[in-house]
Image (tube, rainbow, N blue to C red; front, top):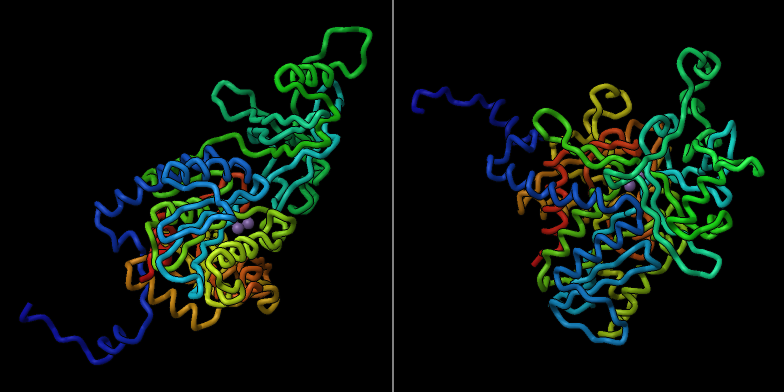
Length: 470
Ligand code: MN
Ligand code: MN
């Protein structure tokens, strides 16, 4: 307008110099928001299909096969556009699309984890007490134990029988299935328990899963309820009590992913840390057709307990895979690693309006502000963090800005309040440039975690443009 007042010098300067943050949804058209919502339907289906690391591998392989991925063969020489996957011990998977460039120029990796906090059954879990049958558990990862009582629970996993044969168990997911539950005290009788600290409110040895209540009708036997439970399990799965010794059975929340909020802007589900980045990194590589740089999505196990074990990223399996493809091309593996780049795809903490004091507001991630980039994690002075370089942060910043990926920075909470880490440090140890990029989550590690559909979509877009760099 001609009569519009001219901007003051200060105002113009402010617009030029100040950092401006804006809700990502205010930057999108209605059509773009419809794309966001459509993408998240696939994600929610994946969450329902993949509640354990094994199921996450199976579901990922199924989606990959449908897009033409085939099992990796170390003896084969691959060329641009070839799509392969490599499953490591049924609990982690590497997906790779070969690029047009030589491996001398490195690979591009998105690394997410597919294990989530949960309750594992102990090796001798079954017992009867007060004529009820229960299962002893040992929690896995950082849980707040009080959150796991009085919610419907399902049992997932594998059992190896005495003869070495394996049976898969999945109880509590089908609408007609029974579910399980961990009991808690009634408030009327909880005066003593209520004096415990919150961390101690429910103790590890109190996380006992109620699995049965009806006795086997025979006056000759003791532990009739336990006998009845084992009889049902034997009939259904052909297993006996000793078979729990060679089993991996995980107790997880029994409900499915749901839209949260009257506007359906959020997703509520178990295991979004880190299946939200696993699914988005997976979809990004499934869309990948002959990229310039060879693209790799790795869905790894054991992050929640320190990336230990041969399915976690502290093991050599990623390096060995890169070694293998390098060898086939006649390139030295250290050369490939030194020129490689990685987005460590893991979630970050979102600002919670009820508990804003745990984050520092200028550096926290916010719901609907896009995928978070976290330069450093760690605790007590960044200890344990890989601390991404300014050079690599600059590169990812330019890439996201040039491709309309809505993103923000994130930090793992106020200084000295706690902290944590991701796989970034272990990838960095391989001589690879890496920075954490992932979706902000509310109530992380709870049995029901929340993410924004907008931010989920932006993570997918971020991983996609990272792979598609020309
Ligand atoms: Mn995580
Ligand atoms: Mn976690």
